[in-house]
Image 1 (cartoon, rainbow, N blue to C red):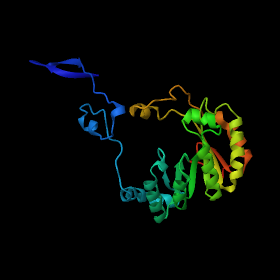
Image 2: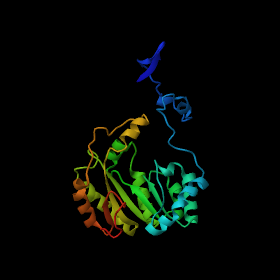
Image 3: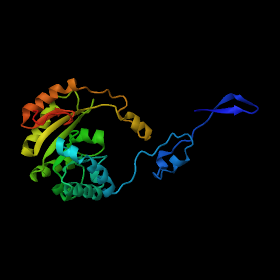
Image 4: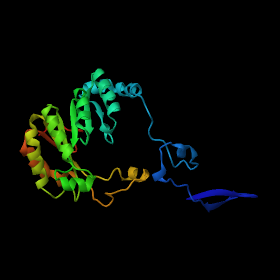
Length: 258
């Protein structure tokens, strides 16, 4: 990093000197945010704030007319919202009190009792299914998928409406047409609960954020996947059941698309 300073007695001439910037030890970080105040280079900024449920819904309800005209509503996502079950429950309760359609976006990796306690306040679950093969799931996520798949079946038993969300990533489940076939086999017994299946091709848009957070970037060298490259997946899944199939999810998609 470089910094300018004026040379004494010659103010019109500036000297460029090298400055070793302060560095953050992420392993010791407690998120106290004192580093933001201490940073004289303005390189650190506070990008989130703590808010109460009331404060959140003061903002949310400013768009109430938009929700009514568009059919939209309130989505709790993350991170993983089920890691904060009390706050998630409070938000969903308040959303239903305000008459909003509610969505829970989750990996499903949570205790069933936690999920069950909030279901009465959820209209739709967006459920990630990253891999059906348990060993591959453990390799790429660090955990087994058995709890996730079991929770999907329990959600169906409760007649909860779901959209299965399928991240498509090189080396994980791309160039493997058996994967969409296996998804169909898994989704069929879930019955009418599965109203949609969304293919989510990998992209590197979050790489800069990950770097700024000082986190490991496992997928740095993984290429982006484009819509055209997963059309075969979409065809297989579309033919497999009555659900709506999309590439990218519901943004800008007609509800009656098959």
